[in-house]
Length: 354
Image (cartoon, rainbow, N blue to C red; front, side, top):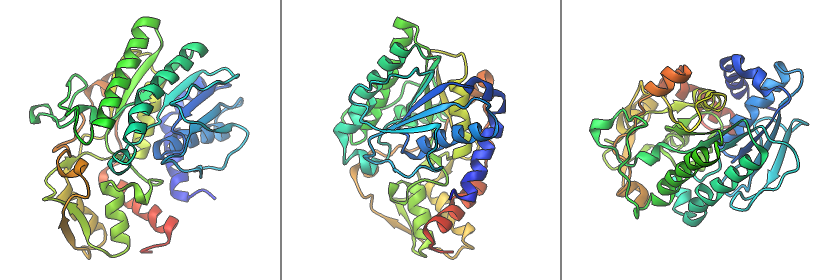
C-alpha cells in the first residue's frame, strides 16, 4: 500500500503538471534509473496521471540494473508500467516506439560512487551515449539528461547563486571526479547530438533533491540527520558544518524535470532546485533539532571519506532565473515543511522514533 504522504506528493505533482497531461496521451516514456529515488517518483507520477487524467494511458518503461536502486516501486506495477532489469552501459534494444526519454540513471551518493567509480563514469558517458542513440533511432519528441549541480564543482562565491553560464571549478582527478566529470561529458554528448542530429535533447541540473522515498543508507546529509534523529542519536556534522546547501523538495524537482521535458527549449541546460533557503550544514542540523523540540545534540565528527573531507563544495545554491523566465518553474515547498513531511514518512516507513 502506498504511503499517504507519497500519494499526496504525487497528487501535487499531477496538479502542477495539469497543463501538460495531454502531451502524454497514448505515448511511451522511457526512464532510466527508474529504481532510484528520483526515478521512482518520475515513474509513479505518470502512473498517477494515467489513473486520474488520461483516457489513453501513457506507457512507462522503467530501466534499472539496481546497483543502488530499489526494486520496490512507489506504486505497484500495472499494465502501464514495464520494469526492465538492464545496465544502460550496454545498448538497449526495444521493439516498441518511444516518444520520450528521461535518462536519470546514475550513482549520485559519494559513498556509493567512490565505491563504484568505474560504473559511475560509464553510466554517465557510455550509458548516456547509448540512450542518445536509442532516442535517435526512435525519433523521440524529447530527451532529458539528468545531470547534477556537481558539474559546477566548488563554485567561486561570486557565482553563488550559480547560473547555468558558470563553467565550473572541478578537480578532474579528485575524489568526486568520477561523478562530476562523467556528468559534464554526458552534457557535452547531449548538446552534440542536438547540434549534429537535431535530437531534441535538454539537460537538467538538479540541486540537492530530498523527500519521502530517499533511502536511509544513502549516506548524504539529510537521510543521515533524519535517521540519527529518529533513533535519538546526535546529529553528525562533518567538520565545522560551514558548507552550505539549498535543498529542493521532491515535488518541486519532479515538476521542473517534466516541465523541461515538455518544453521546446532543445539544446538548453536548466538548473532545477530551490534558491530561497541556502543554509549551512550546522544551521540545517539546528533546524532538524528544532523540529524535534531541540531534544537532539549536534556532534561534529571527521568526514567518513575523502569525497567529503577534501572535496566537498563549500557552497551550493542555484540561480533559477533561466527556468523561471523560460518555463515558468517555481519552487513552492519551504525547507521546514518538506523536512517535516520527510521525517513523518521515515517514521511511518521504518517504524522508528514514532
